[in-house]
Image: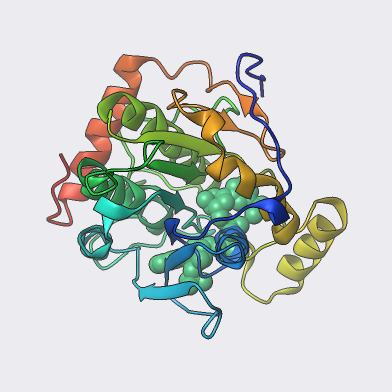
Length: 296
Ligand SMILES: NC(=O)c1ccc[n+]([C@@H]2O[C@H](COP(=O)([O-])OP(=O)(O)OC[C@H]3O[C@@H](n4cnc5c(N)ncnc54)[C@H](OP(=O)(O)O)[C@@H]3O)[C@@H](O)[C@H]2O)c1
């Protein structure tokens, strides 16, 4: 990972943030890192809509729930239409799983990790981006979209078999979701001038993300997460670090920037040239179209 020395931002303590009136959607805000960020944003006065399968914060002031199974492109399309994009100040995309040891396919015929961790985000971004900012007449900064994944580590993705039908191995499939999310940031920053797009790389943190790969509740999963818990900061500690970044005015004019687990600006992966990004996104759109969902 290489650092971007030309971009820095003024850090403040998350406890000093006054987010009354800030409207947020966290897609994937029901669990893990998205949930920790949602709870912190709400505790500072923001109105947060969390999208996911299972609501764990009923009764928490400032958090509302929109239920969706984002393994389905039709559901991602429905969520995009349901979100009040015109008035949102901040959108954070944290939905994700890890590819399973043997290939899983959704009811729409798409490999499950690609569907949940990347393609649902493509559908969401294309669905909400044109409407972002339309009803924020007094806002001083553009609305912003943060896409969480693992950017900046050199993953460029492998074209031609995005649905992993010719061959399947969990790690390369997951790396295609990593590359896809980084390319979604790069492409969106160029495509939409009405909003700013950023990438987030949280590093490794103890959550539920590896359960599909290691087996939910297995000894292997519990031991791995226990070890990660010993070595890495908690989801809540990461939220304390990253939440001031999400709302700092210092990012204005830096659409396309990416940040590491400490909120330091990092450079995009080498090799993500314009022609490669275009080809990868065209393949991604074609895969989404198999679910009878068109993205433009
Ligand atoms: N934790 C790490 O070590 C790590 C490392 C690198 C990158 N990341 C990235 O960080 C992001 C957040 O991951 P995390 O660690 O917070 O994972 P997590 O604890 O497993 O949380 C994932 C979120 O995605 C939602 N989700 C999963 N499947 C869904 C589906 N079919 N429909 C709707 N929502 C679904 C979950 O909601 P429900 O529980 O309601 O289903 C949950 O809110 C991901 O982009 C991941 O790639 C994490």
